[in-house]
Image (cartoon, rainbow, N blue to C red; front, side, top):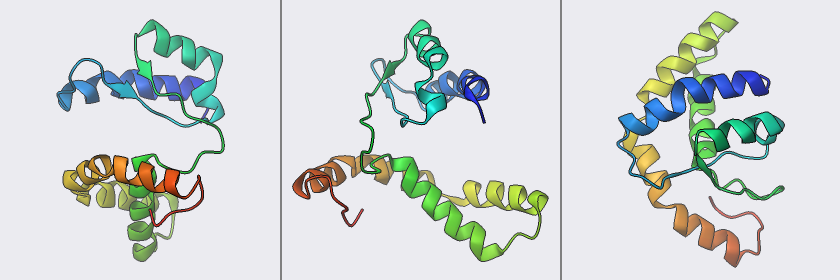
Length: 128
């Protein structure tokens, strides 16, 4: 994936998702320091769309809640042992759909606790 593809995904999904989730004004978008996220064109696109973006330090611990979801998805997909790319795509979609919204909600709700744990460990690994 390159920056243009990333911006297309944001364009197609970010605002519709925020609306569907009934996000209130003032919400903040967060992504990591992947080069396509930090590309000048991506930053400019987000600025023009008036999105607030959370500053994310490089070499930071993985505090992004999506990382926990990716781990759960990887485990579920690996257990089903897809044998080709088509099966992999189908299984990924099926397993993603099985993850209850409450899992994501709980990851967001426990963010403060995870952040406090990282601070207490001076940035080193935590149980999260």
